[in-house]
Length: 365
Image 1 (cartoon, rainbow, N blue to C red):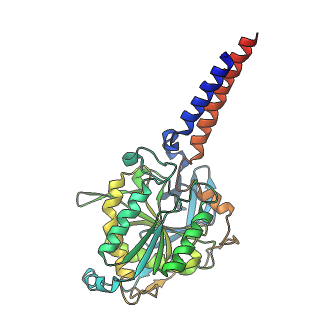
Image 2: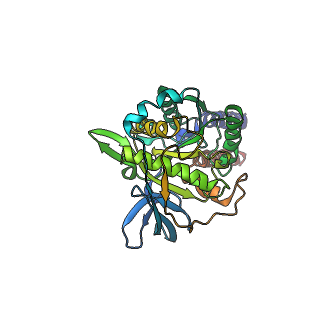
Image 3: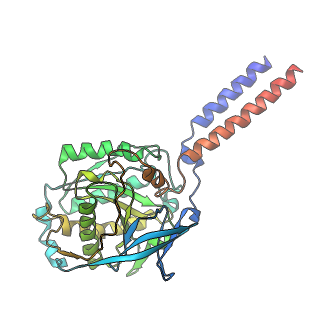
């Protein structure tokens, strides 16, 4: 009879543990996951939460660097080129573009739905729809204010693991086929320290934004050209807006269209409200590029004179499959994954089982 009571207690405890949302066990990320990247003269350039040799990035000064050495959590990059914006629209012209934005569709989705913001959400991730969904909704609203038609797909691609991009690829392809959008944006948040993203302009607390492009897709150069156009135009309007363009070894489902980009909307340690504050400025830049009759071209009146060298190396990864590059990206945007929760659950069950076994063994004696 006593044995049956122990079994009932065990089952109740199991039910109790399984009823928890995994966010209950989420551990806030820490800066041990970040890499600090320096140039050849030991000048700090940027922070990134996952890097590989051969990755490249463009700074707000329009200089491009390529990572050539990684030592522990420090990476070194050499300058390989630069580019400049030779022609741009002014802010006044933008007002005349809004009418042309009508009926032009932009699609938004989230590969890593769990991503959240510690100061505002309490956790860096949740098992399900995290704080990044709130950011995507704000972006949708602001784009609609510019007369774009916006489709926000909140399909969950959890868990945050090596196959998340394969799952979100199904969503992205569906959006592309169904709506024929002028752009597809994958919305994320980064996993580095707050200081890299935080800025204050005219007394307003803001978050910078990182653009990420995947080298392992056949459309990389066209994606990059569009990213550079948006980057240069945005930073000519608001010099603080974009922190950098990072070209990683993943594919990020960007082979679908020239105007597919991944946005890192701040980082897990920044206030979500600061990201909200930055969204209207991002939308101004998007509207300036895409909100015109010329939207079928990535140039769109913003001619770019690109002097970047051809040193970029493209991986042989199949753009339609998962890869080791995707594995490295699992931690890129989320310092702690949902597996943390299950580790705690398994450990708890193991301890409970051991206690019950000990009690049963003792009663038999």
